[in-house]
Image (cartoon, rainbow, N blue to C red; front, side, top):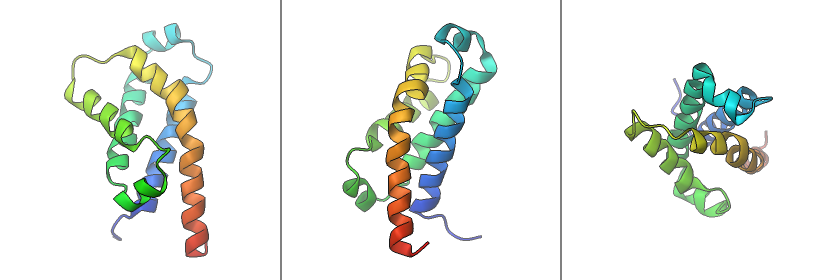
Length: 119
């Protein structure tokens, strides 16, 4: 098995952002807050995005300062270490406002990597 590189982690981020966006599509906040499966799924997405963002090398982070790398990792840490107290508002805002802003930035980074590597 090959060692994972920054592209792999960026693909993880993009994949789980897309999952989160799909999970909340067509939902109101009230519907979301009553749907335990969707809540758990979104928490998992946020955890994966946060963990993968921690694995992005510093040079990539420096080259793309508009991406909120530290915030992505921070929300993951708050979720993982706050086991029994999950703020539905934060989860909802992350999935419906923050992830849609981050997704195109991650897509650009992946395109840049592909163009440099000749994909």
